[in-house]
Amino acid sequence: MPRLAVIGHPVAHSLSPAMQTAALREMGLAGEWTYEAIDVEPNEFRRTIGQLPQGGFAGVNVTIPHKREAFEIVDDPSDAVRAIGAANTLSFGGGRIAAENTDAPGLIASLPESPRGRRALVLGAGGAARAAAWALADAGAAVWVWNRTHKKTERLASDIGVRPVQPEGMNRALAVSRYEIVVNATSVGLEPPGRPGADLKALHVDAESFTDKHLLVDLVYGESETELVRAARSGGAQVVDGREVLVQQGAASLRIWTRQEPPIDAMRRAIHAKPTDEP
Image (cartoon, rainbow, N blue to C red; front, side):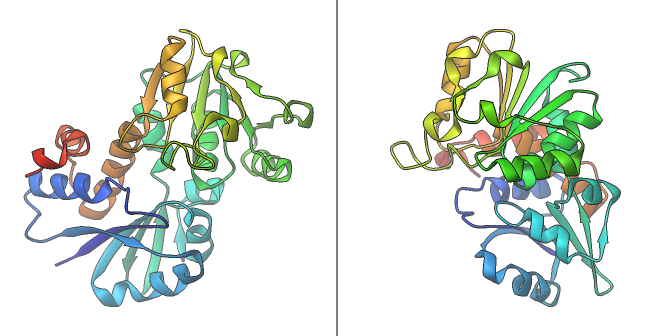
């Protein structure tokens, strides 16, 4: 029975197990494949990945904070993984580890229309931010990136071939009015409200700048909407939340592992179901 999993730290909040299990059930593979969540601290990541093939794992999704390290340890990265410098989908076979990045096509698939010709701002400098910046640029958008640490901003911009937000803009709230698409690829909003790092102050964004001309993609998802999503909706912006991106990237991962077409609607239903609604 091939095993699959999502690996991250923290990972208890992940909806991937419910979503992928529902997909496998719909595909008629629930008796053959399983999907679980594994919490792995950063200093244990390499050792854990090395042990998974012996444990019957066919592949894993990789999430915060391991995507960059996943790229560094694989044997066969795809061209996209090499360009992005981060991996979120690993496959085990023949004593080797192959890597793909489904965050990039998942993001583009979740957008209501092509980003070509649009000005986009990506917040963050981790693996998800790198995938978002690369995907948007590859799809024809003009992309700027921002992170609280400017050296990381410069490094990401140089690696991916996009523009950094300049230092003079780093010390005041970012005016999103300069952009048409905003992607939050930080962990801000992942913590429950009231905890440090949970609110817009940590994100450094002028949320009052959102209007009906904006599209916000917030990769963070939880039991309730993030403060950023609420602010964007209040200004009239169109919003794509992290659940839809999760569905699209998760479907792309399943195509790689099973070589079958995943049931997108069943995956959406699974992640929007209340606990009492789950089969």
